[in-house]
Image 1 (cartoon, one colour):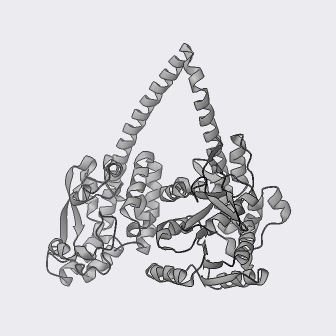
Image 2 (image 1 turned 135 degrees about the horizontal axis):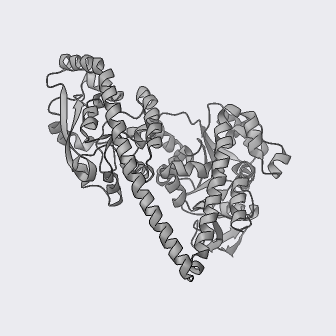
Image 3 (image 1 turned 30 degrees about the vertical axis):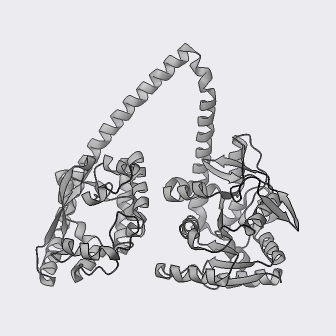
Length: 506
C-alpha cells in the first residue's frame, strides 16, 4: 500500500535550502516490496533528498534494493534487519517496478546508483563537498577517482581505499576516512557485506552521507561495460550482465529471478486474501470451510513435525555411528598429541544447556590447560566480544599448541558425536550454550532452546566467531522456524568446506 511518511533524514517540516532560500520540507512518499520500504520519488526529488542530507548534522546511510537484494534478505536475516532499520532506501531495477505494479502502485523512477553517481559528483562539486571511495579491487578505486575528477573538475576526492583490507585494519580505515574530512562515502563491497559494514560502523563515521554502491566502481573504472540504452529502457539490463559474466551471474538471474517472481506472487495472493477476509467472515459457509481448512493444516503440521523428528533422530544415529567408526584413527592420533603436549586428561567435560534448557554433559577433546575455567575469571577484562554473552579473546593463553590446531578445524568437537548418539544433541542444531550465558539471553533469543542443540548450525557455516551472539541467535531462530531434513543435508554439506577453511574459528 502506498503511504506518505515524514522524511526520516530530517524531521517532518524541516527546512531544505535551495540556493539561499529555505523551503519547507515535504514528506517523502514511502512504499514497500516484500516487506522492505523504499522512497518512491522522482529523480529530481531524490537529488533534493541527497542535498538535504549533505546539510544535515547527522550521518545517514543510503542503500539500494533490487530483486537480488530482496532475495538475499530472505536468506540473511541480519541483512534484512539492517534494511528495515535504514531510513533511506532507493529502488533499483525492473524487479521493484514489477513489485509495485502487482500492488497497483506507480514507481516514480528507477534510482540505481550507476545513474545517480554522476549527478552526486556534480552536486558535490557545486557544493564544494568532498568524496571518499572505499571498496572494489586494488587499482579500480583509483580509476574511479580519476574519472570523477576528470568529468567534474571542481570535485575533491578526499581519499581512496580498496576493499581488500584485513579485519584488524578496519579501525585504521575508518580513522583515515574521518581524518580526510570527507562529506560523502561510497562503499563498494557487494551485497550484503557493504550494507552490514556501514550499519555496523555508521556511529563511528563523521561523513554526512554513506552510500552502498555494489558494482558501481567497476562500471566507471571501465572493468565492466554497462548495458546499452535499449536494454535499460526495456528493464532487461540483467541480460547484459549475464552475457558478460555468465559464470558469476547465472545463479543470481537464472535461479534468482524466478524465485523473486514467486515471492512477489505469494505476497500478492496473501494481500488479496487479507483484503477479502472480512467479507468471507460474513458468510457462515465460508467461515465453516476456513475453520475446517485451518484444522487440517494444524493436523498436517503436527504430523510433519513428528515425522520429521523421527527421521532426524534416525539420521543422527546412522551418521554418528558412521562418523565415529571412520574417525577412530583421528581420535587416537589427537589423543596421543594431547598427552604429549600438556599434562591433564584427554577429554574435557562441561555442563551445557540442551533442549528446553535441560542440562547434559558435553564432551570435547581437551584444547586448553587444566585450570582454564579458573583463568577465565582473570582474563574476563580482555574479552573481545562486546555482546555481553560470548567470551572470546585472540591468542587465548589458555589454549595449548595442539589445542590451537584442533580448535581451528573443530577437531576438538568430534567427541560430541557420542552426545548425538546418546540423544543429547543432533547433527544440525544451535550450538549448546553455557548456563552462565543463558541468564544474559533476551526473551526472543531463548527460542534457540526450543530445539535440540547440534554439532553444526547456520552460523557455523556463516562465519562462526566472526558473528556477534545476536547474529548467531537470529540464525538459530530462523533455523528453528524453517527446519527441514533437506535444509539439514545442505548445512552438513556446507559445514565441510567451512571446517577445512577454519574460517571464524578461535
